[in-house]
Image 1 (cartoon, rainbow, N blue to C red):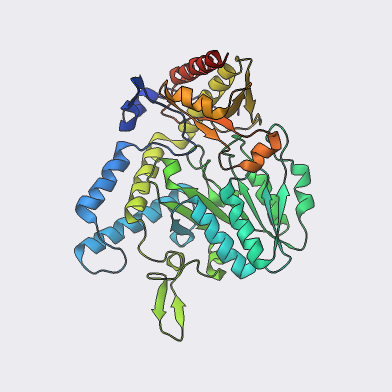
Image 2: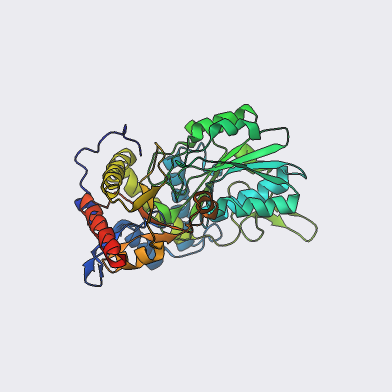
Length: 414
């Protein structure tokens, strides 16, 4: 939680809620309260309508046709790439690769970077708080290349122990891959410092931005990161679309991740010549509708203002933290000084799945489980947590209902 952030002025969450038709849903006679935004965000009408327009009026394959619909689809698809480039301030659309999501983007880098740059005995640095999507691909790569993973630990507040970071570097280090905001702890990691230290050893850095892209302004040139990955569905866009940003000089050297149509210039049985960036990494028919829908989502957020969104969500985090801290039986897991709008908690002698089930009967959607971060649960010696994650369409009144719902849970189990 960052108490130094500006307070959002005249931020009208009630007005914004009108843009999200799903928020009118009734759950067992109660108004839906959606606090599972770290898993996926809901979609504004402009995104839904844009996808509908594509399928009704523009549906065609891209890059391969000279007919009208193909030209329209290609134009809109590439316009979407331009929008992503501008949203994260990349230097060129050549550095924007469309993927199915964060997971595929990390797998792409693990495979292609690994095949190109990693040899037996080399080392990759990740952290103890990573999502499984930023652990397992590197394990697979290390197994294939006979390389080694090194782990940067965090403390009981959920903050990385940076004093240990530089100790992990040596002549075998080839890459650092780190989450920007932890999906289970809410910790905002000091990624600029992490990147600067790695670069002082001439080591490239991948940033998992799945939980930061919708909460803060991302400028990849300012950060200096070598790779940045995120998912469309986390940032109010469609599922099945994601982005890999990579510095051109690295992507140029990396081997393709998959083979097929569109990633080639020419194919013979004796030799295949690969396409230019970014198409070298986009084999087959892409998620055209997903990319176009993502463009609408990013434009929607830009019109509201990421800084305003961030300030308002921080207000919600501060309010919810203070409110839930009034419950004696509740313990928040993840108390870093810098946090995104995520609160994970446990209740004395009550399993998180029971908490989530009872809250669901109150119309409140939270996430329960290990959140694909089992090493985090192992650190705290707990099986799971209940997680409430907030968006700019949530309100303090909804947090009050969460507080009351947790009191009902305690009453049931007392």
